[in-house]
Length: 198
Image (spheres, rainbow, N blue to C red):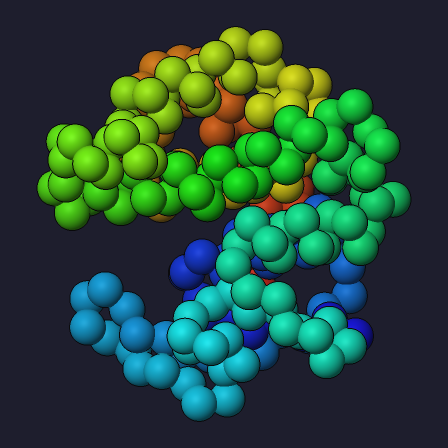
C-alpha cells in the first residue's frame, strides 16, 4: 500500500502527477506545512522528519525527497515506462538528471531567489544559473524530452519547476515548447483534481 503525505500546491503536487502517469493506487493524506509566506504550520501526523512534503510511505517504509520518491516509484512500476530500469542504456542518464535536479537545479534556483546567485563559493560548489541553463538547453536540443524521445520522471521534476517559477528556466521557444508538451499530458490534468481535498 502506498500513502502520500501531500500539501496542496507544493512540491508534493508533482508526485501526484507521477502517480497518475504510473497508474499507481495510492492513498493521499492531506497535510499542513509551514509556507514561505508565514502561513501554515507543521503537522505532527506527517512522518517526514522535517515535517515537509512529499513524504511517501510504502508498506511501512518512509521515502522522502522528490528525486528519491521519483526513483522509488518509477522502479516500483517499471511497466509504466516512466523511468528506465536497471540495465537500460538510458538508466545512467536518468539517474544523473534526477540527482542533478536535486543537487544543482534546486539549489541554484534557491540561491537566485535569495539574491545569492553571484556568490563565488556557491557557484564553484553548485554552479550558476548560466551553467544550469546551458545543461538543460543542451539536453533539450536532442529532445523532445531530457532523455531524448522518452518522457520520464526527470521531466516531471523540471516541468514542475517551470510551472512554479518559469523565469528560473531558460527563456525561449525550445523550453516553452518543452513545457507545453509536458503540461499537456493527461496525467498532469488528472492530478489537479487530487491536489486539494474535496
